[in-house]
Length: 310
Ligand code: GLU
Image 1 (spheres, rainbow, N blue to C red):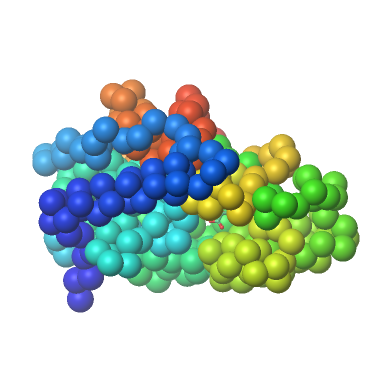
Image 2: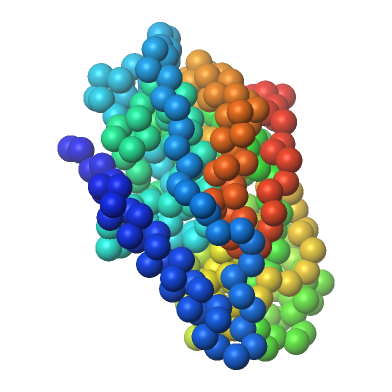
């Protein structure tokens, strides 16, 4: 069954406008609250579709071509990265843009021939193994354990683990002050593994998603949320009066595009496409329209590196 979640352009623009207005109102309305930092997107990026693209020998690509559209896994509750608007079903964010520009390079129109599917951290490997999705773009760290189960292309960004706390928090300033405090992260994620393995004095709490952790932080059920800085900045920029990101990054999280492990042709094609989209400025356009709004200007994209992914 086709579950494409895209809406007509005027509706998308209206939604974007409402969102920007809401952000501006939130930033300017309350005394003392900082304005939303970073540039506002001038326009949604558009990606040139390579209509002549063919990838014989990639079972994933051939299946998608037959089906007529790509099914891409991402997150639905990570502002700035992968977020689904419940009113429109529309997905937005940096990961979504990366997914779309790569779809365009593989010959699929990102506005018509792409279906997004929300897959939580713990379910990514299974989703790729059982063919539920063609590829995955959603804050997915490349590491050796995962490489035994799935393939990767990239990296397309390097994040780092940090802590998100309530704005009035004074004592929790970084990983050194977590002893006895409740630290929340997502099941199946590298930040949760790191807390449990390297910081045994912290009281680790796990939920299916970071959005649930953030609710628990606001309700004072936990003392911090830990995961990649990109994700935490997205939540903090939505509620700047209530939340803040603290400390220096205490890990390196190179983000890869997850593919079925046996489909090396697809991983190589995605590497080539990513390199081309970095060179022609599309990567930067995507960053400026999404993650830059959480407050961090665009870094140089990392070099695509098969020695890391394969
Ligand atoms: N990048 C980390 C990971 O892949 C944390 C973010 C996530 O759970 O998606 O586990």
